[in-house]
Image (cartoon, rainbow, N blue to C red; front, side, top):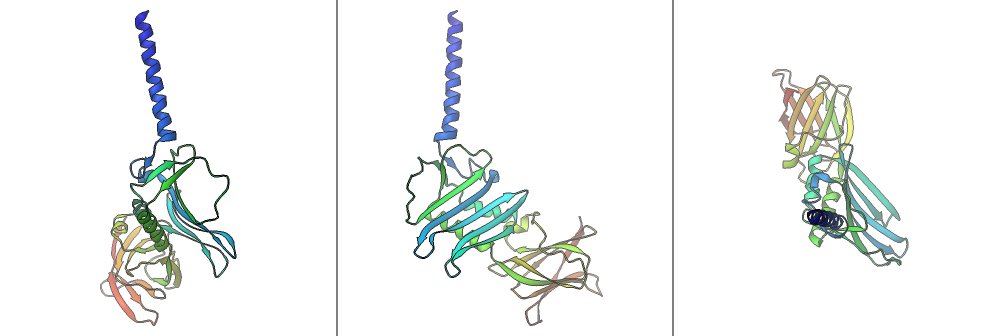
Amino acid sequence: MQKRRVLLILIILIAVAVAGGFGYMRFIRAYVVGKDPKLSEITSVYCMSTSTNPDYGHVYNKYTVRKKDQKYYAETDIFDEQRGEQVVISTEITNAEYTEILKLIEGSRYERQGKAPENVSTESSTFADLIWDRQPNGRWELILDTDKRTNFVNAVNNVVRTISISFVNEIQPSSVWIIRDTPENRKTSIWGTAMIKPEELGKEYTADIPLSVDDKYLFRMIDVDGLYYDAAIPELLSGWTVKVFSDENSRNVLLNVFDDKGELRCECDVFSAAL
């Protein structure tokens, strides 16, 4: 009988410890980005600043990255004082770019906050938050130091910027991606939705592509027969034209870049292989 009582007490103590640990994990403790949650678990992060404009009242600037249905997006929602309204810019990015932005907030703490104040201050304020599948209950906040906040905002601002180019395909109807030339993008094989789908050969198509601060890009193309093409573009600016064609003599695939005056700026060899 005594042994049963001791065993019962031990079971109760273990249950209380487990329940207490769970309560601590879910309601009290602070999480650390990159460890718990892991970067791969995060589905959305945003950083927001609010203020009161004398002419327009409460305004805000919000910078967001998120993933949904195996696609990745960056978005800015910024108050434009000249237009007197919020202006939203959203663009699809690569999974590599999404991960690189998340790395900027790695090590930040996700802390439980007290009860929300009844009277919201009209002073300027900042706030950040993230979402993942095991989101704890209650009121929490992503704590970003000045450097992490600035780096995150700048990174989102950069990836939503685009340039307009023209594209001519003389190979095969294809799906085309022209992405920033970064070490991360060189390693990834997931580029998101095709930026250009030139079905008519020889026709000039216009498209918006991500702005690369150093003007360098990676060309990726998959044609209707499943042939894969890639090349590095050393320079490409807004208003320029990219042309992909097969050399009549060698039958090699080439990529030419022409500036806005029609002058040839560079000629690139294109690698091709069956998928």
